[in-house]
Length: 610
Image 1 (cartoon, one colour):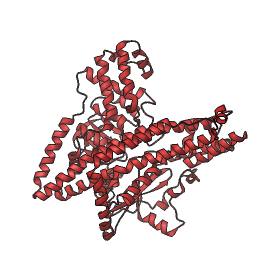
Image 2: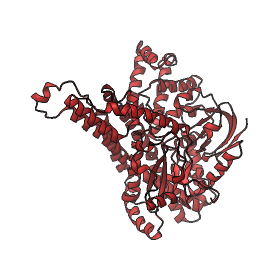
Image 3: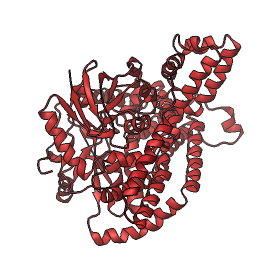
């Protein structure tokens, strides 16, 4: 990895015209040269751009989820379960882009001491996984219900008589401040639960990978991942609901209605017949909770859910209706995947020489398969269901700001930090209480306009892949599994950079799902574009999410800019038996719709043929 070098974080490029951008983000996220010790630490670490979660610069409010997992992941790694070789993940921001670094434990003696705690604490969770997971699900549903029921009160011209007659003793202004605090608190709590199991889920997979790599030195990472696959998870359920609705429309003879017009037109037309009304009953039942699935990753406020834009699920459902009309099978090939998985597992297990090794293999594999569903299922509860409700509750807060002229548009609220919003609410309710003019209208519209200009300059800038020193080894489970940053992939990264700068006929990423195919490229940057996909094309996207599921019915391979072996695109492609190359960094910018390419999901290479 000696040929892989990155700039110092303290010498990173500044963008003219953005001076002062730092005030848009938490102060502790900033690289600093003021303190020699902190500066030395920052220069010695490997900071890589988290394009998996943040393919565009961070809005000042949207960084709340980064703050939430900054705390939650690290605390479970370092203070609760005590992962032996890894503490947490440190975060920084530069020109609006998030950079993260795994913080390792380097002292072998300390690793040994931490292992004792981890064995005890993690072992308890692994041994009682199903019971604890049921408890987790109940806790998450309670948090989601509290969020759904949370009222964002609008300060009235005059309080209701009940405030006096019932001796309530507090104002709507107080309740608004309290509601905002509760909204933020619920968001942070949801992310505490988010990581209760997730570190352990990835850790179990990492342990299994480590065992396999030592037992079978030449085994590709994909083969290990395939042995854990073929398991049904609820994150597939929104897509399953669309398939059921497609089948039902044909069974009831209302499929022609479903195929014409936007969602409003379709739903209105369904009201015109008994069978249409039966279909609508199923539609309404599916919406709660399965249409609370985000059209993106859920990390940005603009990742609206299906319930926010019903045209999206209607449009996606039509893909399935078309296939069913042709007599095609729209089910995931789960039986085939499981058969291949079991054959692969048996083959590698038979290579083990001792009964002890076989027992260890069986135990580690069983644990990895037990925990795997959570690794995907938590996404629906938190990033999709919870986030979709959360963003809309914040829009209710923003509407109050608009009414009082603190901001010009509801969507302007995302340019303020959560702390600034709290201060602005105090300004608003005290002005409301006294009948005076708040200062907010003089401050925030002008500041937001400036921040919009800064954000645009951030978007036009290309962040470096990483900054700081390349590490000798990577030991943090999330870094390995989710981002695909491993000691081996660092060498692949060096190759990727060399190819990107030299060979224009090739793109190199990370192997996501095995297979070798040729086909025509279709670049889709948003879920709204997947309807343009033609049968047998190769999907090229920044990343994918559960809303993209119908696309995998049409394509023969997938290529993404970001992601590791456990990213959504890689997992779904393995479930469908499709090749995938992920983490290319540049596929959507280097490839154009209509080009012919060869995708090799085993090597992570894409040859540009035309």
